[in-house]
Length: 222
Image 1 (cartoon, rainbow, N blue to C red):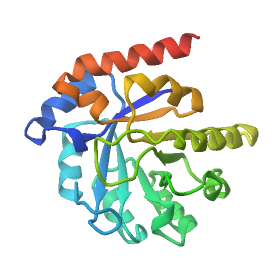
Image 2: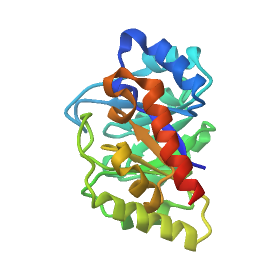
Image 3: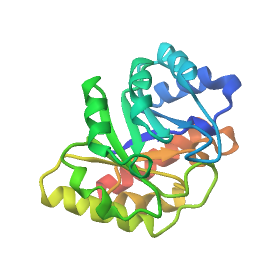
């Protein structure tokens, strides 16, 4: 199943609750929430208070992306504040299996993330332990970047490995996804699509979401 996950890093925070209502109306299943510590990436973003408030406002799946060093020490608090999926970076810990186990201990879905500079092979040993892999299509930390085309090769390799080993796996891609390249992204094997600019362009949320869903429907009918 192909799912949209709007990145609220691109949102107008003064109107976030209204935006969430639009997502619900358009049957968008996920909200993508970036957590940045200013160290792993040179920026700061949402924290636990924001996630708690978003959790109170919706039953949508909260897809929380930890762009932080030593994610293990942060997992418990983000699970407790309402996250449904916890993504951590392979590059941010030397104990990925422990991070996965810790996420699942709290009954959440575990996602391992790789940066554009990390090879797909780095996460293959963990595919049977996680629910999702997040492939960064851009260097993490800033919105509005263009998709690095080579990152789609990682999606292809991860999807091929999962399929050949009968692993039920969601593959998420984040960064630079636009209507113009969405079909290529889907063909590569991604099925969870993070959208920032593609959804928030000109602040025409309903129109932009419907445009993305139209491309998804056309792809599924081919």
